[in-house]
Image (cartoon, rainbow, N blue to C red; front, side, top):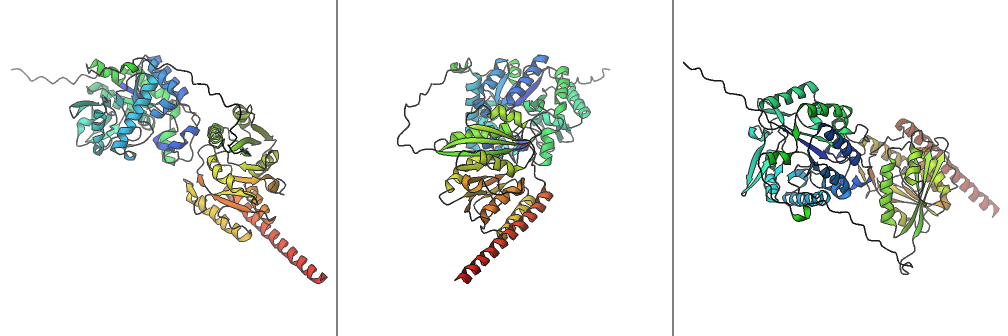
Length: 577
């Protein structure tokens, strides 16, 4: 009597899929609460060096991968995308900006798809067939997006991540499958997950490989390889190979853990899997399955050649009708700001271009006795520029002393001071400078003005600062909303000789207070204050608060003394008569 045979286990996939997210460290989801898209251009980019690390790693193991690339990078740094394509890796889309489906309606999603694909194809000279959502993942309610992808001619998507009970009612979504829409077929490559009792846990994504126990992850991947015929879909980000990337300390704690934990171990983690299994890119996998793709347009059969930009020769004489530009000096106090200076440099480059029609800007950078590499970076970024001067204090004297040094170094009557960390966007000078009209001695930025705004600054710190402003209003003549801002425009002749005793943050308020006592006119301009993104604040909260109370006492006594002196003078004049 024949005994029933035991069914053979499914054959494991011959090759698994390796995908790489090509984006910079400041473009990622964990930092979206503090970094806006319109701030991206300010950051020092590290995507080129991180991409080179990734390419070298893949070359070492002889592997090809699919790179999901943010379209913004293709437009800003096309040579990076072109280099990846030239090394034989596939270029696929990760949207234009780093946005989730929740931020995009159906038509905006479609427009984003088209814009990103066009940017990537221009840069790489190859056809873009695949897509992955830049931020977040598709939920069961988001599957309409697969229809849009199919309509736009994409061949595949990799935006589904089965996690916990998501897709529990559709367990097939854990594996490679086809989605039919309007006669078109879209392949879906979900992030691989371990499943138990209808619950799923991703096992092959960069963040999960860094955060979860290595033993657990390795056993889960081994089990998938041994038992699942569908290929494992693994991914990581190029910035995960960069443990020395700048830390954005303003991000919430859990998001910082998500972004930075175990970055120093990621190279070793990846080497384990790349050496143990065979990987390929999605396009190669589909070709091996006999999936045909439409012929690429002729224009995309080779990378576009780089052409020289036209040379623009200025007119021999300036436009006689153009108003003369106003000379303005911008003072930037710097103390241990080595990591912040590239961000500042990109911001000032944009500021100069924005204001060049109206203002002739020059800059004075005052190093206030920094103990890090600030001086060297200042010299590298600004030292050779004819409109920039770098001045150094031999010791740390404080931000107000640095501002005063810069004001005295200036050769213009209009002098601005800005924060090195750009917590006030320097572009707001376009509003502040025009307010320094005849008879005005100082214009101060005011986030607490009824038309001002504060973003991401802790509530407790706002409460302390607003409480100080209330106290200063009781002492000084000018009833302002903000007295402590370093972001100001000065009339040099009115402030250069002010007797300031305090050199640090207190001196910023003292400068305004002394000018108030001298009878100067001060106005405030509504402004937006952001949280500091790079480096650390130098302010010691308790010490500074105690110092403000001491300064308020001195200013109140000085005002009372002046009032008494005025009364005595009136009495003498009356007696003389």
